Structures are given as structure tokens and as C-alpha cells.
Length: 184
Image (tube, rainbow, N blue to C red):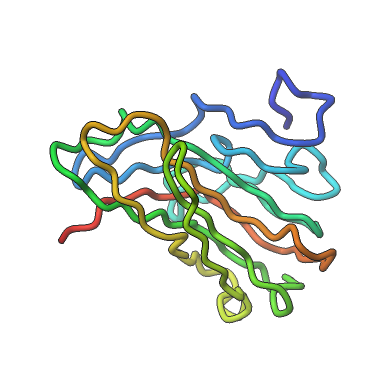
């Protein structure tokens, strides 16, 4: 299932109108995997689009990583979409589930990046093996936190990557991200 504008391109380009919404209760923004950029996401040797059970996900479709040695998933959200009247810290949470036959997550950490337009990204690396052991359970992995001030313009940018090695990994489902305000 390719993005119509990039049917012959191996990378999935974010469909920015696809499944993105704000929970009016607490201001959490949910962004689907379809609304993010996924390197090799249009190549079925590496990624598949899969139906997600309604009882487990707020989205109908997620991305299944079949196998890849270069993982790079990135997204952005216009800061104007975040409701804020005062400086607010937001946590970016990646929603990931591993399959029973997942592999390659014990050798190389995944790097998570968060930041706003024009600023240096905060980075943190996590070895995902302990999450893989809890297969078939959705994990909320914190990619980091960022402060957004009311007068800021631009984008909140975030990503999940491992581009330093040629270590193969696979068997992961990616639902998307949650961007939730932290209550201080």
C-alpha cells in the first residue's frame, strides 16, 4: 500500500492528513505511523502495513518491520496544533510491540531524537531487548521531552533510528507516537 505520490519510491513519505488527532481531555496528540516518514517503508521486503485491532489501537493501520539493517522513522507536528497558554513540557512516546519471532534488538541500541525546528535535537539511546521479551504487548517508549513556549513557531520534530551499523533487526510493530503534555 504505497503513498500515491511515491508509488515507485522505496521510502514512505508522511501522509500528513492521515490519522492524526488531539484528545480533547488532556491535550495528547496521537500520530499514526502513516503520518510519519519511514525509510524503506514502501518496500515490502522491509515493511508491511498491517491492520491493528480496534481493541488495542486508536488507529486502523500500523507499520510492521519485517527486517531492516537501517531503521529511520521520523515525524513532525506543527507547534500551532499544541494547545498552550504557558510554557509546557511535552513527552514524545513511541508505541511499539514486538512479535514472538522478533530478532536483532539485543546488540544495538535505538536512538530517539526530539526537538523543535532550528534547535539541536535531544538524543537518547535504548537497547530494546527487554521490551522484545514482552512480545505481543504494546510498549510506550519515551523518546524524550521538550519544552514548548506559547510564542514558538515551527515544528516539534521526533525520530527513532539506528543507522550506525549493518545489524539486521525485525519483527516489530509500530503504531505511531503520542505527544502528551507533562503535568508539573
